[in-house]
Length: 148
Image (tube, rainbow, N blue to C red):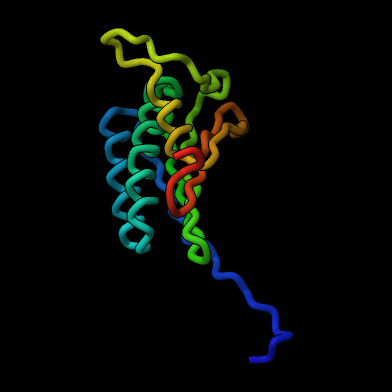
């Protein structure tokens, strides 16, 4: 091979699915993500972290991003060159942005999701999804996330 010939990076594997904004839809998002990552032969550590991140982001989309008659979208993009994964969960409520809060410390279920996402992901954030929604994303690289 000619050393001057540019090397093309392999294109990312992508997956997108609309799911009902229900607890069942959130559970299905997690199951579909794991199945897709296994099909792509993603690294085991990425798959394990992605399973939890998708579960948390999908649960948040159902709980905080729900509008009647509107679904949420799960998106995955795996870069085969470096094994990095981007997870995106899009819901209909752009007016309700995620915020890190201290877990309530009691028996309640609130406040634990985003700190868990932040601990498992290399990076995460939120961007508007016009006309009125938002996409919460997380990136996971192979190996342990920073600080682990």
